[in-house]
Amino acid sequence: MKFAGAVDTFEAIRSIEDKFQVSTYKKMDIAVERGNGSWVYSSSGAKYLDLYGGHAVCATGHSHPHVVAAIKEQAEKVIFYSNLVYSDIRGRAAEKVASLAPASLSKVFFCNSGTEANENAMRMARMVTGRQKIISFSGGFHGRTADSISATFLGKYRKLGEPNVPFHVEAEFGDIDSLLSVIDMETAGVILEPIQSMAGVREAEPSYFQRLRELCDQNGTLLIFDEVQTGVGRTGNWFFAGSELAAGVVPDIVTLAKSLGSGIPVGACLVNNTVSSSIKENDLGTTFGGGMIAMAAVIATLEAIEKDGMLGNAKAIEQKLRAAELKGVRSIRGKGCLLGIECTGNAGDTFNRLLESGIITGTSSDPKVLRLLPPLNTSLDDLDILIKELS
Figure (cartoon, rainbow, N blue to C red):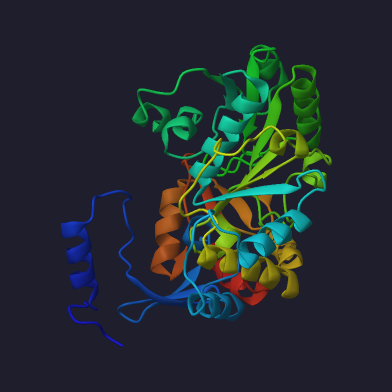
């Protein structure tokens, strides 16, 4: 069905967006009209293999039938009511998320985005400890709102957020001695991405997370994993927290968003009892967080990942790519469906070449690292298309 005034040529779509929308990202010359699985289709009829997933959002692929059906069913009942009332679907969504998390992370606070989840996580750390200082890491990205961008020590982002929120301190990612030089009894929280995606898919050894946990415990500091990108199955585990990748370490708070609703905006903080028991009524709030459509999407997303065996598939994707003989590739970084291809040349050139061949990928702040954030149900046959282009 075409609505009155709708435009369908690429030129017309680009013209109306450029005219009325505030400029943000440099866009690809594609107007996505529809999607199915790991594929998107443009207004001009072109077909693209999407190995970027709308920036790690489309975990279940585009328009997964189970997710679509759940959203439709809920929309016909009630689209929204706030947290001032009880809701069966909100309760079931919280139960489902908590059931998949490490046992100590037993309560959920729903919000609308990753940056909002991180803002609330840092706020909770300050509430629980009565302290103000937050430590984050070089190369980390936590969002664009005030507290989150102040915790972001990556390129120009923190400067874009000036004047920054005070009491934010930087440590070097993966360097325990650097953390030791800044953590103390005045530190409310330590927040980090377990795999730094935008910085070029930077990783740390499992033992690093053990020392983080020990140092936080010694200083009465809350440990926060920003799993906006690593969470919801992307590494081949439901969460980085508690997995072998973290040597079993469980933080006090895990933040989620991106993949959690398969594209419906939703974020969350998973917290332990120490945190939840310290939060009183009206300490936190959100108008749209926990809305019924978002909750339906959360449940359906987690069910689809579970029923379709997507965790195992994410691991198989990583294994197949690592086993391939790829020209112009120095190394493969990351885990599961959060991967960095370190190129011998400029990653931007590889990005452009792949896009011309109908494959969407992503770049990073590292000019040599191309990022892959594909749907968790991307087929190994579809992955062969990328491998052929890089062989």
